[in-house]
Amino acid sequence: MTASSAQPGYKLYWTVWAVLLTLTLVMLLVDQAPLPRLLFVVVMVIAMLVKASLIGIYYMHLRFEHMAIALMVVVGLLVNAAVLYALIVPDALQIQQMSMP
Amino acid sequence: MTTVADGAVDRWAGGVCPFEMGWRKLMMWIFIITDGLLFAGLLAASGYGRTMASVWPEQSGVFSIPFIAAMTFVLISSSATMASAVAAAHAGKTADVTRFVGLTIVGGLVFLGMQAYEWTHIIGEGATLTSNPWGDPLFGAYFFMITGFHGSHVLTGLIVLVSLLVRWTKGLSTSEGVELAGLYWHFVDLVWVFVFTCFYLI
Image (cartoon, rainbow over all chains, first blue to last red; front, side, top):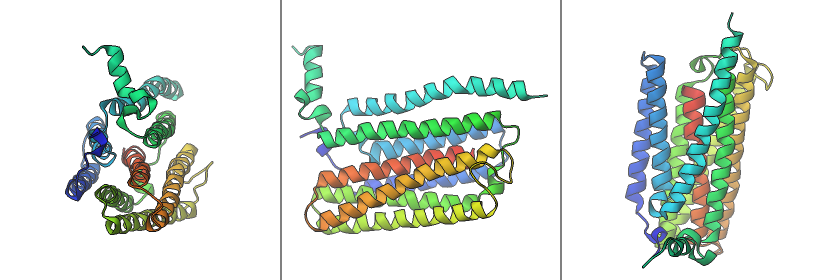
């Protein structure tokens, strides 16, 4: 039996659905709360990454696939995206500072 | 004794069944990663433009956030029905596959309809690719680019799902076909999670 042949039932998927919706509601509540900007961004990013992980792990079956595929996705997407941001954010901040009076 | 080389061969399975999955699914995963980088680039560009902008519009003043949240609800729900369709296909529950794929199509259509309504509203307010009444001209450009690219992916997903439904009812598709369509649809949902957070909320 291959790793991908182990299939979960409906219940798991609808439990994940409930968690995803709950997290979305939490994000909407946080959006209305008077939080400091940095804390607000950190909370939102964490909630976003948890939601994305739930979709990847359960809906896209990464949990049931070969570990190498999961690593390929994480390294391919997250690390590349992180490198992209790390390269452009300092540049954007520098331009912002230069444009300030 | 198993060597490192043996491990690599096991994992690749001689190229016949790489990573213990069929080549179609592997290709879909590679496509998803590359397509994901497209959206990462768009969102990164949006962040870049926003950081540089002297005045970036307050999202809640431009969009109806509860309406966007309702769009999110629809898309997440359609992902749950699609995941159920995949489970049904693997369990051999043919009627359930038809029902769940049909529900997923309805969810996708509702989402696209809501997006068309949102675009109509925003365009009606005077936003174009090069200007908008709320501040930095790049705001409109990024809005139309990011949501437009995502919407085109939803439309593509709908074409795939309708094609799948027709083929499934005729007995021409397999459980792997349902799973591949599901992977694509979940990817569309995954991208929306990032768009919703990075563009509409933060």
